[in-house]
Length: 130
Picture 1 (cartoon, rainbow, N blue to C red):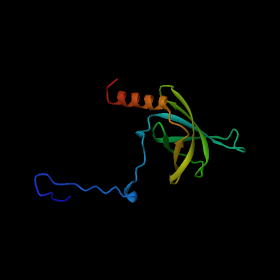
Picture 2: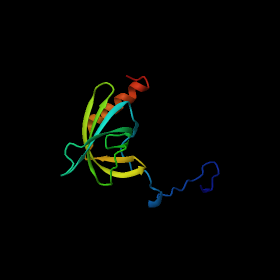
Picture 3: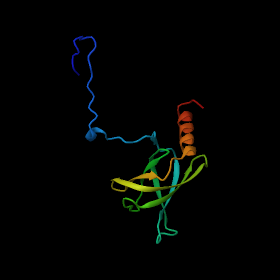
Picture 4: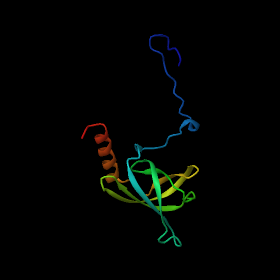
């Protein structure tokens, strides 16, 4: 903060250096609601290899999951998410990063408007708006 000559109204200097731009998300991430998560690696030799995981958080463009099944960065995966009310979403994405042991960031192949609207509706219900 610097003084612009008027101490009642200080001037703020913002540093937008690339090394400070940490959060690149453009979608709102929601704490994961109660859901069942089934995953399947997509690939020539991965047919039928389903396993379970847990949603940590989710947005219309990605999710953070935990799974005991190891996933490598750039693995393609199919996600089947069944929420507590029975709503089903079948999504595809790519492992963008392994955040911590057994935690993986999944970038969805495309924005899901239906998922975005559903998550927003769930948020509204949780705060008593719907």
